[in-house]
Length: 75
Image (tube, one colour):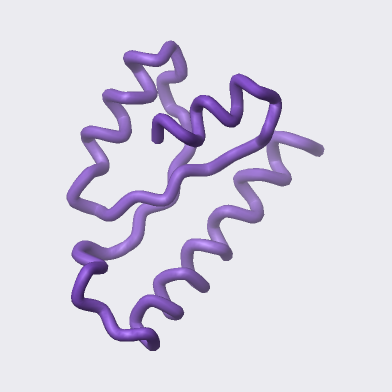
């Protein structure tokens, strides 16, 4: 969240990707940085023990959500 918010402040559209365990933390970080409702994408938790196939599946699902979030803000 911090990196995405900083990128936004630099004029670089960004969307954070977090695991479901950290949803509330991500919401609070957005609020504390003056960006309540800042968009982020949630993937399944945990990722540390996922094999390549599981990580690829999570990444593809996240990408399908990220693209509309980025284009909605720029178009």
